[in-house]
Image 1: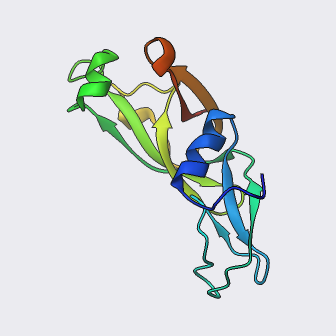
Image 2: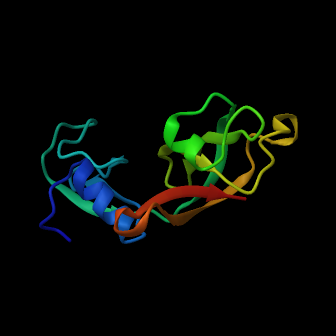
Length: 137
């Protein structure tokens, strides 16, 4: 694990392994998600991999009705919206992800601050299947 570069490709590979991995500065302890090779707090290049728990709370969200083609293929659209939110993880970092298990047709019932837990969904045709990070109450 320590020989992987701190970049989006490695982050995606870890998601395929059902792990949320970021970087931590060995000098000051600052966390980065997605991972970065350089600490934005102290500019150190001495980074290490760290696994995030995947638990957090909903910080903000939106119900999406005008969908990109990939989501339309999954059946989402004007009459079947989906939710994307900002999740503040227990480690303090924020991550954007799809929120499942809530009624996107009733956004007024969704509460900011609600606890969420990461899940991994495997979707896609045949050998093109990918792993997606989602959050669920």
